[in-house]
Length: 93
Image (cartoon, rainbow, N blue to C red):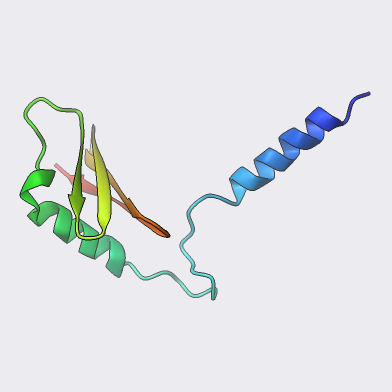
């Protein structure tokens, strides 16, 4: 039996499982909500981040982040990232 493919699949799954977000930083302390709140406030205040008429997806830049927004049934789902950090939030309708 070939074990190379199953081992490669398991290794890929292990890598992907380790790539997800976390609510803790590397010290084990709870992560601060301040970056998400600051990004949310900057997104709301930035004129270029306003939803274009009829758009279901759009993007914009805020200080040090690049953001993508998508219309959902709850409002707008926004994901912002920069090298080494990402934040996500929902703007409710």
